[in-house]
Image (cartoon, rainbow, N blue to C red; front, side):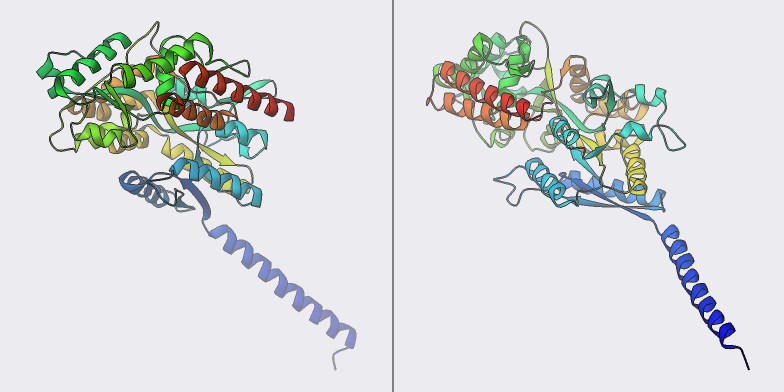
Length: 434
């Protein structure tokens, strides 16, 4: 007969060994399963399809990681902005404690996300076997790299890395310009004169444009202006008034320009001589039937300065260390010379690595599509829009100023001063909250 004490001991030992086996089994299962990473983006249509193919390629090449891409866009694309929808969802899920592991973000979003400790700086992953060397870091296009560096403590840190970048250029209808003996405009005076000639002789707008803050910025930066300096709105005064008046005069005095939400469609149909947009539009226009277009640098003022656009890739601090490391490998993949080349060729965005721009594959592509060379040329004079957290709201304030002046609800002077006052109130309020 087995003593009772030994029977209890044997039972306890059996339970312990069973529990231990379950723990070991769970550990082996967890260690053997790939790390899942949720990636949020706002790339739709053909760009979204290409991005999904890149995600699947990464997953094949990295079987220990599964990236799940999620498109986050506006409920009604005709009425809403996909990026705004993405930003709203990020903030909503941060409040819930369920943000994505990695996402597209704009620079001013990054500022706000840093303030609430929502991001894991990407530079913390540079060391180690899956890191990024100093040589590789220097390979990023300088202005893109600088736009991703933010003050943290006593030094600047790279919180994000550039992804889908483009730069604003001027599109013009080659057939109309050839017929009227016009040359691509070099200065803003040339630009205004060309629009007037087209309007007078062809009976169509010389320019169609989206009446928004970016249009305002083209003229502002070209004439040495800035949106914000020393945490104060600096787009007022004569620079801002002259800027807004320039567009109002083209619409109402010269009658050579037309503000329109479907400006790209009108230009594509030959209903306008010129259109301003980023280089990311080139591919779409190339597919348009019966459209002969050219691409040139935006006009110069007292200087050359061109706004660039597009987002960066951010890793969120709420993720586990394993997910952050996996997300970093995905970020490194998307920003590698090979992938940024394929992404640029497939979408019309610019490569974010200098070696990719100089590479045989992209150079061969430029030989076949020379208009893309204008975007590369413009990078020498690229400027980044404000990165303050208030910029998203100030963009809306300046959009309103454009509408109010173009609709003649306010004079250019009054519209600008109202925008400056509202912007300064917002900047002061946010400064006081810190």
